[in-house]
Length: 476
Image (cartoon, rainbow, N blue to C red; front, side):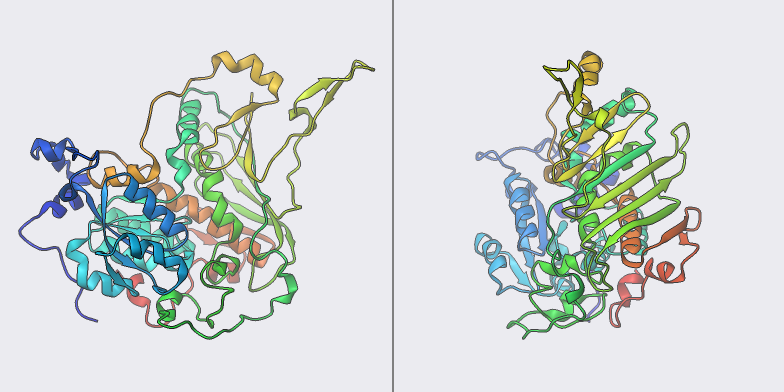
């Protein structure tokens, strides 16, 4: 492979974009740039948009692409996908006929590094790491879909490279720019959410691997589609045959490639609690329940319990995760709404409805229930909410969404809300939970050394060796 290109000289508009977040250069540029001058159609002129490369252009990547383009803040200059003939990748190619196309992200950067300001990475979990590391090493801002990486140590390396390179980073947990983010931040700062000692989080929707169970004893094999870049798809992970049980959307079911329901939904449910309660990393991770454990695919249902130590004046906190359609979390009857029985005159509590995905946060004085993504918290039971509602801080104002926030950060006009130093430790909680889902038992974690103390097999899964030929990204 030829030598990776470096940034060209003399400095261009893109060089300003690439360095603006760290240097504040936009404050001394001409007003048409510094103020983000609009074109007649309401968007920025093309010369002042962020030049964006998209890696993974189908399904979630396509949805991400459309929202970024709709912001008016970016030009899509390159499209990269291992399956450019797949039906799911056609829309992006049709909408951007002038964008150059690649099946290998390494070749894309070899040819176009000078023409790219930022990269959207929306590929399967196991492939995020190599793409993001290479992009950051070349000075490109990166937006990486959640979860940030497939393993604990990959997150460590990504955080270190983000700090070293100084680029803008963002993980794609979109609710971290929504109403729940601003509410949780304000309510913790104002002391409404305080002394939290227990959190219940759950995702009880059906998942792709449900029903597979013990029938999965090996990876299936099917003919490789024409022009499919399977070696690139596999990346640093273990290689298995192509099948539609992996591509284009089933990969999340398998330990070798995805992070299951926890890695998929945890970033949308636990993100604000993890950040504003300063949870960091746990001291123990217990697999309380594993229904239908399988060495290859995720359990049909699981309950995973984490113990987080005290942080400053915040008490220790227990976080319990539930997934599986029938694995519904238990919630105290007293937290439900109530009604008075017309015959007996007694108060009757209704069960708390948990829905498909969400959390319940137990504080010293108040208990809160919320959903996922941008859903705001509410005080439960309703009687308690009525008592305190006039004292709750009001959240007002209009803010950029997660995608615009990233692009504006690339231009030096905002700070990204889910940078790798925030989303990395959050993802590492999911990485540890996945190991417990895979192996069972209780894992004792040393927060000082980032090591699992009581299980060598689990310790090895923190940083498995990459597949031969993919070591270079671990050495950047």
